[in-house]
Length: 89
Image 1 (cartoon, helix red, strand yellow):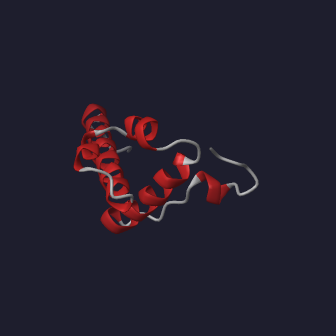
Image 2 (cartoon, rainbow, N blue to C red; image 1 turned 30 degrees about the vertical axis):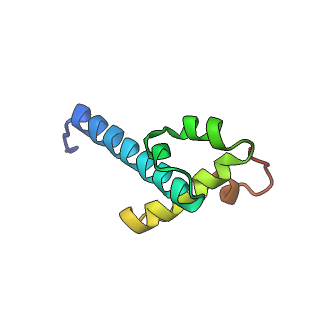
Image 3 (cartoon, one colour; image 1 turned 90 degrees about the vertical axis):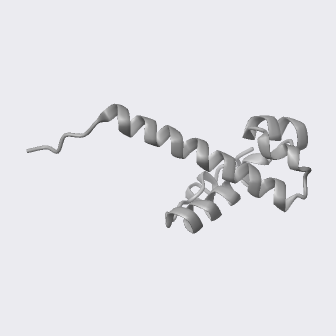
């Protein structure tokens, strides 16, 4: 018999983890590029538009991979790693 679960609770948890991951990625990028502390409160899209341009996805993916491995023990591959013949920007 299939296991029953609370779909709404699962969705809330996934959303919470997504927000937590984005905050960690933003903080990691700000630390690496030595941006002022106010950037810690930006979203990834705001960070990209204020400080970065083309190729920002590669920066995000690098930090996302590091954080997923370190904090969640998840071995994640970026789209560029999965499909090296495609140019991402």
